[in-house]
Each structure stands twice: as C-alpha cells, then as structure tokens.
Length: 69
Image (tube, rainbow, N blue to C red; front, side, top):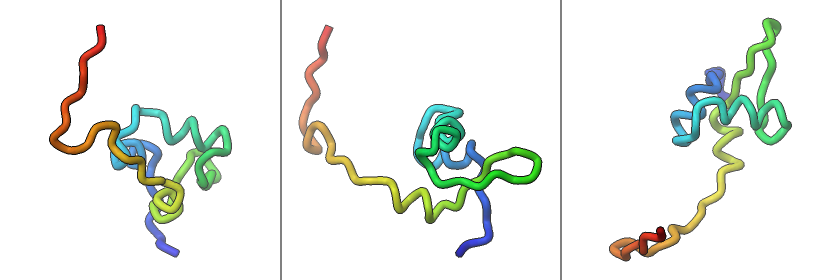
C-alpha cells in the first residue's frame, strides 16, 4: 500500500472536480478515506482510482454538440 496520503483538494484537482467534492463524498461514505487524529480527511490515490469508471463521451471525437437554448 502506498504511503502518500492525499489531501481532499488533491483528489478534487486530479479528477477535475469542484472544490470540496472529495470531502463531501468521503463524509457521506461514498469514497474510501482515512480520518487523522486531528479530524482531517486523507485519501490513497489507488483506492480512489479503483472506483472511477470510464464513461464514454456523449459525442464521438470530431462530432459536434448541438447548443440548446
């Protein structure tokens, strides 16, 4: 197991999530995490990536999205 714990902000940045998303998901039991003695939350990257699923693009590469108004 890796020894580098990530801050929630690191997970948000790596996954291009809105700030606070990783912390929120951890508090709701949706992401594996560790609570340090001071109450702060940390993550192991390998545990996070094992949960991330590949989602196909809505439009094939080179396709055009239609703007809706």
